Amino acid sequence: MRRHLIVGNWKMHKTAAEAAAYVRRLAGLVRQSAKVEIVLAPPFTALSVAALPAARRFAFAGQDLHWEDAGAYTGEISAPMLKALGCRYVILGHSERRRLFGDDDAAINRKVLAALRHGLRPILCIGESLGERRRGQTTRVVLRQLQNGLRGISKVAGRHIAIAYEPVWAIGTGQAAAPEQIDSVHRTIRSCFARKWGRRAADRLRILYGGSVKPDNIIDFLGTAEIDGALVGSACLNPRSFARIISQTQSARQ
Image (cartoon, rainbow, N blue to C red):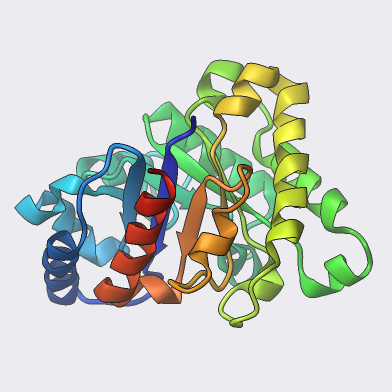
């Protein structure tokens, strides 16, 4: 059975001091469980919280990285920098990076390769816009982003990748996708992995859902075996709200 993965993406929220208070509060609200992995993705300026004693029960992720290890790339952060700050994961290809900052499939693929090269575990985000869904293009878009994002990656390296399906039309809108819609796309993703690397690799792959995940709908998502966790946005910013999501995920795995 795949271990559930719950990721809190803070986006551009919380100073270093606010992040430290959050981690201490969250640590007091959640119990440890071997069946659920909890990942926090603070902004780069707050990643130092990974060194706090209260942070030991969590894993940490960068929200993005540059594909080069170092160089004249003002404003960027590299995989070695994230590793040095205690990160185990990195979120790549988030729809906001694609839409607002011009990250295309080729750039995202370079970032995935850089993350793997330095022992970081990519959480590769893919998903269609509302217009693409209405035109019946969901499968085509998702498979294009997935296949291009994984270009040049070996079967062994692929074991360290998680996929987050996040339909763009559901992110921050309060309009979450229906479980049956998510299940269908997740099956498509897993089938793609099976064709590329075999059924065993596909069975190991953790596929998350992201898009208006809240404490009162997480159980609905976890009702299908194809959903292995969630990439949580606004609902993770309040430690009590995020703790409820974590607790319900832990209960679902008993």
